[in-house]
Length: 285
Image (cartoon, rainbow, N blue to C red; front, side, top):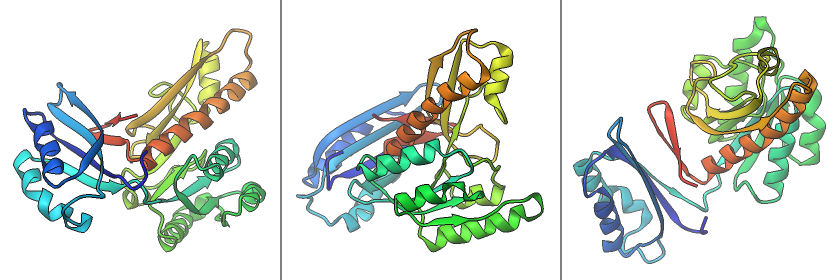
């Protein structure tokens, strides 16, 4: 993404003239459009659009953009938000014992691929402490037992709020979040599921796939909702397997997929490339 750009994301009932009206507004206020992507979903009559523009010569401060844009938004029945490419959101990572996704995210962050800040890593096991220390990210251990699950969740939520976290990544965090937790970060919790959803939901999907004798396994990154493994899908990928592969082989191949799929979803979320409608997403790459 171009540095110091503004990103306008919008959805509305599909109708003629939306592109012209939005582009005209930006042009009239001396903005320079850098990229524009759109998609119309005929089944739901929904139009979605992402416009990235250079605001350096705008004739109004970005702080006044909402007031000026609102009349047009009401006329077109737009749901919209404006983001800035140089704003670094704060991402918290929750992890259990499996650390491959955590390590991948931290490496990509260190290399500059993920333009965010990571104020904390939270785990219900101590195993990832050394990894967090290596990358100089604060690590917090919050054990979760059946008898203290809700209290542990409240502790984690308080920690996230204390650190000003904008969104949460579940990097193989093997706990089902409560409705209260999910509602605290609506459409801002990204999970990686080790299956090509909607196939093999829930626990041990590689074992389920092995028993079914599949020829392809996959990984899915999605936003978390109150329905297990049913949130809007951001990214998926697959790899072929054969009758020669054991369960351990499936797990190894799947973990490679999980890292890549999760990192893509996180990067697209950070770069404001994901628009949601219903239980679907549009990803403007």
